[in-house]
Length: 92
Image (cartoon, rainbow, N blue to C red; front, side):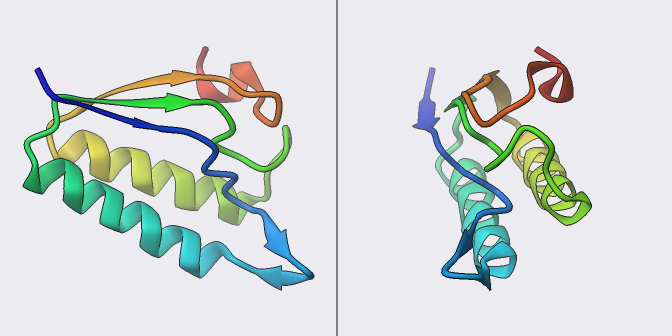
């Protein structure tokens, strides 16, 4: 069984006022491609998918699309909420 362990996506974070969603979306897309290309069975995300407990609608869209791509690549997704996440929002 092949695992890929990640953490601290912080989707929705800005850097000195600059919006990083496009870059975050690209990185998460590469992650989904890696999952498909390496036949990963399960992706572990150890907290902080979002940068805040109440993320923007765009941050939710980016994270949801990434999760869908990872699942479509055939991997199970195992998530533990971090201090920046809302457990109910993540379905935990």
